[in-house]
Image 1 (tube, helix red, strand yellow):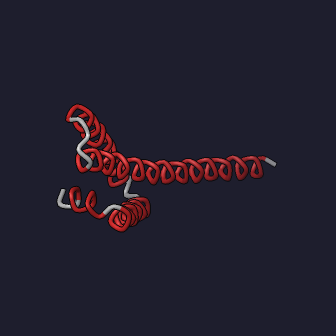
Image 2 (cartoon, one colour):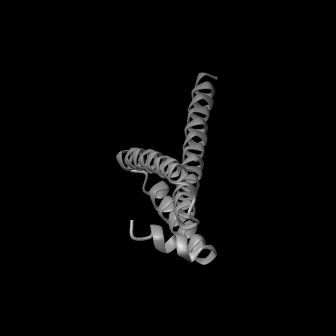
Image 3 (cartoon, rainbow, N blue to C red):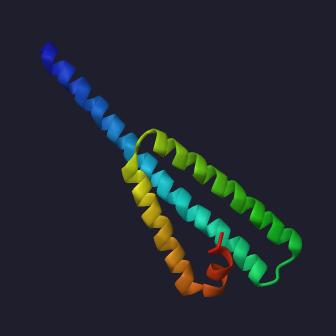
Amino acid sequence: MDVWRKFKAQAQTFADKEMQATAQVQTFMEQIDDTVLNVSLAGKGFQTGKEEDLVNMLCDSAIVSLNMLAVSCEYLYKENDRNAIDLGRKRAHDKLSELKSSNNAVYELIEPH
């Protein structure tokens, strides 16, 4: 009976770690979506001639978003989570390709950076 309890405890610990890892990857994917959106909104604001204060605020938001994404990437790198990093790279590429097809002018503005 004692062995069964240990097995159940180990199985539960494994399940908890797997759920946490899945949630972490999902959050990372959402963070990539938000970062690309923030950067593209700043580009759209500039491209459409919005007020300078608004464009500056959007750029500040994009910078914060990029910095937080860098922190997440560094964490995943230190944890040696190549799967999440590769998924994130693909997600960012897909989102930027989407932007290129939907608003090429904004894409051309932000792509060199």
